[in-house]
Image (tube, rainbow, N blue to C red; front, side):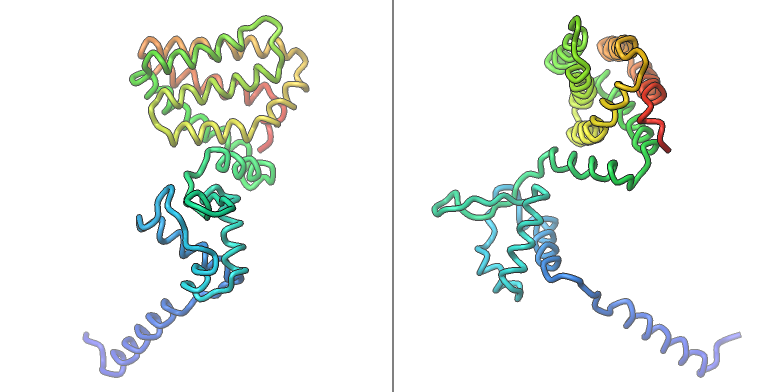
Length: 260
């Protein structure tokens, strides 16, 4: 049966109300967020790129209809994120420029998230497994001589007799990042470095809680060699399997990585 005219009118009215509700202005707690959004929109639209100079603070405030204080706060936030860089003085090199976001910025935020337990360590470990397995598979098919040399250089550092725990830990991180770089995927590399570095303090502290850290270092190094050998042999499947085994071995052996 068809709708009565009264029903159609009610439905039509409801549709208009919903449309109005969808387009209601959103509230903002701080004006500087509007400035960040405006700059972000231009970057996403391709109107601003790395190296481009932003308008002067006074001009940007005028264009956006906000105070200079709001612009100044927005630029401080964006600079802390690595999105812009500012240079004082006068001349061609002065002003605020769009910058390539460094890996360090990603690492900093991830480290803070881990420290504040915004996600569990078990989630971090699981992410490492999935990410680094993919890197190992790609590295087995893409790694060239230069990439393999970087991987082997980290193995050599960890093989150094009497190597300190700190040096071993840093070379361990560099080893995993080198595999991601050998995969030829910069995002894999940046994420691997950020995740592994975010765990640096936890891993280092956990090693000191192990009864025999030297034995554990030797076991992990043996696994490193197996992963590297599989990559050199072009055996991505074995490299991925050994990578998962290695990450889970470390997670099980280090007390600080047992947290849910």
